[in-house]
Image 1 (tube, rainbow, N blue to C red):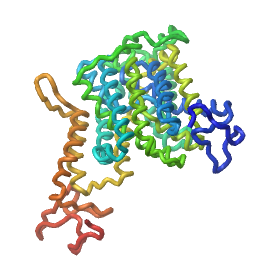
Image 2: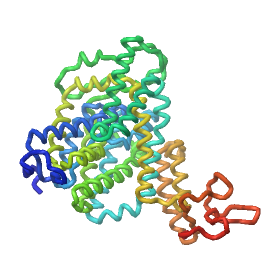
Image 3: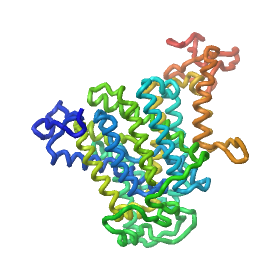
Image 4: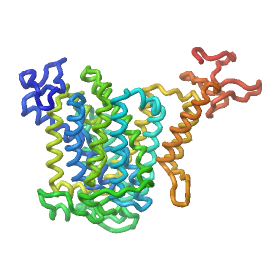
Length: 497
């Protein structure tokens, strides 16, 4: 398939019912530009919110999201139409780096190594087949890792963003949830962006009507201030390089540098490596979704997709940008429009690159109030965690089986609870990194002895003996030990293995 030799179909007009526009095809350039604009709006909210949360420059992030998208499309040969926006999988790891005194160079250095690791996994998958990775990282494991990454971030919402303006945060979260669930179609897919707009408008209204607010700022210091500070917007130029440091530009008061080089620390690299597992799961899921829509067999392209995402992440972070990943929001746009043309993604990528060269755009992003981010992150972080559960449900992971239930439970608690293991006086593993290690190690450890374990899958709708409890074996009753999976007559439930 030629990278840029799109065939014009359906007379360049909207495809008739039942028809599609395939990746190597396109509509008229006018309609293609319009579709590209839809892709820009679909990726817009999360692509600049996550860099801001991580203390990285949103201009660089959106610029390199466009560059990474173009590289990705070239690497996959145009077979997997996707947009690469900012990944949420590293947010918790970045928070851990900053909590340990790391700066933005430490953050981008750790992410760069993660990108190279993902690229290496992509090469391995390409030459050995996708089934090899699934043996080490089956759905039970990837779901647990994604879940602990999302839920580990709950204290950030509660301690940093929500207290800055709780009522705006509440209204923003409420609207975002309603928009995502009830609006449907294109408007539902841009619920995060709509929530940002509403929260920003509410903050502006409150400043105008009620005046300044007295509450904790991003550092936790109680101050009286306007919710929105537009001073930086007026001073910013319309066109320029994102090379300046914005002092105190982050919602938690951190300085946000422009273009900068990475620095490397093993301690910090370990903190973000679990994000690679999440990216593998995301890319695999998105490749399957695109394959179902286009009807193409894209399993042979999974390795290229992982490699392309890894290269995009490494390249972006080398210049001070954010990690990238394929975006489900843009896959949703394809599903709604039935237009899978890569031409629309090239248009979206070019628009993103141009936005990256506008300091005025970056200044508007920096002015987003912490309370608005409180409402957005309440929803986003929870959704990250629940995506782990979604992986379990879609792959029918059996939690009536102690081989799944027990080891994954231990890892999730270690990750969410920020449990720390001091390996030496100078090196420790904590939180997401430790939880991920526990999930993988314990999962495979118990399977090494799996032949000696009696498993009793739970039958749907069957209540446990003894009330609300967790049971992985027999239950003590007045009549002696009894399986919780037996019916009232003491017989095994139908279908019990």
